[in-house]
Image (cartoon, rainbow, N blue to C red; front, side, top):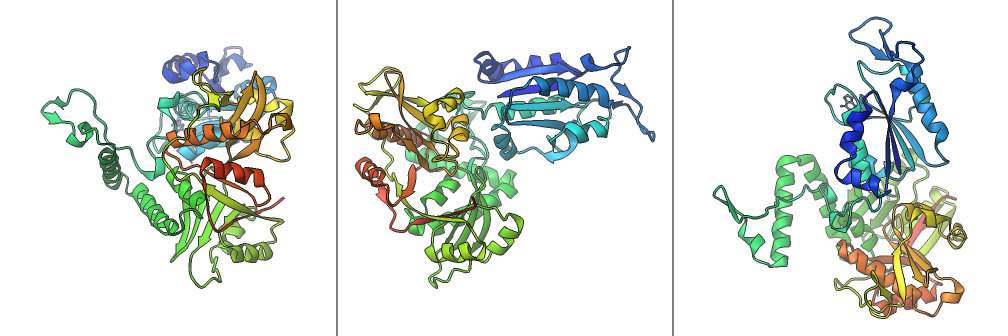
Length: 476
Ligand code: ADE
């Protein structure tokens, strides 16, 4: 992904972003950052870029021409791709982690930094796709705001952070702030590290950290704490049918769930990453009130759904004229221990595995084998770009793929005919399960009834099958 920052102060931006993690990521070609000097594009012979605002008022305004020409010159030389043009301003929508996640899926982001009292509105109307503010305060220029956005987005680009700096475990994960942390010495200024952290008892430490995170969130961010409590209530209900609801509890566990509605035992959540709505109704009546759906469909008639009761799927399909309804089995890896790897794949040349398994990179999305999978797995390319799809290789040749789908389940399993019956699928799924366990996730998979080979593999790897099915409603 490439960031293009349009500014009157290119040194300020580059000096800061070329240090530390973003600087390292640029040097390793994980991201590109350039600063474009807006002044280079002015047609004024004195190199001026500002003028007085019509109608009077304090201060000067950046003129349309240099901003427009700077922006066009960048856009013209970009290859095809997903891009946005952002103007940073206190008049924008507040920047959030969720926006950072969405922006991280782009190929190019242009950020326009205003100075003086702002920028002529006409150029903004012509080129800008988003106006973003980093908070309710006014800075002297847009540079710091642009740097904040670049930093927050860059760290979500695959492989910018290394494994132990995982973007998954962080503040806001699951709506809780991070617990307090301590390093050596054990006593500093007469203050001791909480004894439990020195005990070596992992379980006790986990409990302490969770409790401390809850306390801190309650005190400092009552708004986040309310969201956390709502989702905890949902989790309790969902756990009544644990295997059937793993897709939903994992939304909560992975910090992706947005609470939409709860009524006795009916729950509607939205996955903040994929936009899919997940619903269950454990009320015994069996009629399914599905009461919130009218409002949901008025707002978002395209909403894809994952439902956990057949009668509700049938009712909604008819009522809202969904074009496809499919029924999936769900299987869950319920243990915490990793699966044995021996004989399957090697990691960095170690162990005795047949295959090499590694994440596919964006360039590999164009491999003919992968392009051929577009119909079967429409989201494959997008998931590769996010670093969520893995390839297994035999003597350098792609012998299979599997990854994490946009809804958080395992999927996109594909093994070319000539590599079948050679444990390529087992190697891929074992790798994926072990990787997800390391990230604190519960791996699960959803697949069609007729996929008997996929079912056999799940049984072999020890996944447990939910009794009930999951129903997908989507529009073509
Ligand atoms: N420019 C000046 N203040 C700003 C803010 N709070 N957010 C974004 N851009 C700005």
